Length: 220
Image (cartoon, rainbow, N blue to C red; front, top):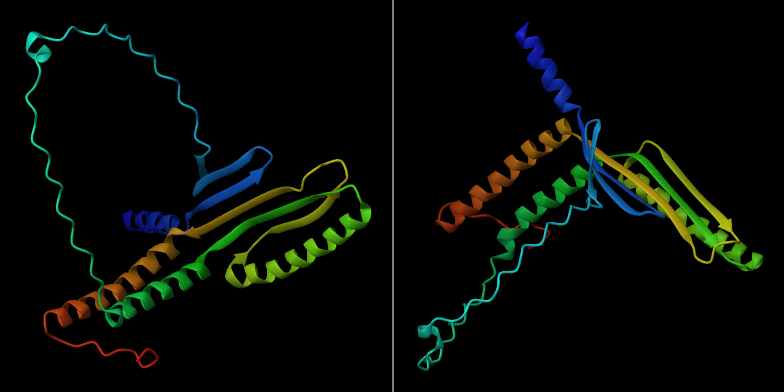
């Protein structure tokens, strides 16, 4: 029975969503961290109560020893300039960079956009100019959405462009909920952690005069 409970806990932890929720409207930006069903606000921070000001103590009179003039001190020696940092081998850095880029690409594909909301409210007095701006804005949005869908899996989206003759500036309402499950995150950490460790071991052996690392053909 205990094994089944432990397995259930592991499964529940694996499907817990982690991520961020960003929102912008007339109240300003709002940034929250998503931890399962809970959402913790990062920005704006709550204003802390001002601490009571400490009572200022009256200035103390200097002692007779402090009142006497001090002898002149020798000039301080300037610290020696630090040696310039040297770079490492680019060929040794390439395998690590490949692992990092592969991790970022796989990490991006594991992310999920649960909610994407974007509403642009165009302002203007001239209906003709506003109609032109409306068409250009929809064209830009239409070109942006396919790129976002290639980068992320978007579950829900709400994109809208509107016009308002009563406002003096263009307004925007935006919201983005981006999450990844703990199970996916741990699997990525294990797979790419092992790959990075292998490359680091190879590099350490090479520096000690052991196995040599052959440069990749496409960079040779």
